[in-house]
Amino acid sequence: MFEVIIMPKAIKDFEDMPKSDGKRMYDKLMTLQHGLTGDVKKLNQFAPAYRLRSGDWRALFDLKNQSIIVHRILNRREAYR
Image (cartoon, rainbow, N blue to C red; front, side, top):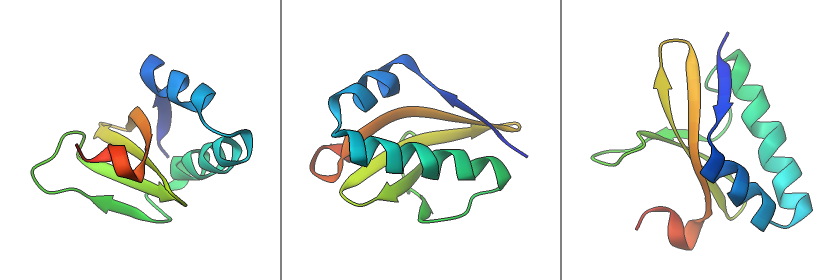
């Protein structure tokens, strides 16, 4: 079981999102506690190393021990720049 840690920048990203998209992303992030399920992809030569897709939004995160550290939640147009 993983612990999901949402960093301050990601919290600010949540506040800037439409509420319905934010709730959907939060629910998907919480399902990651039970394993890397859903639309998770390991990114090549990119930091953070993983992304979770929810509609047009991407949560960028890293794995460290038994923790998922969410760094940013961005629109897909901005996520990989």
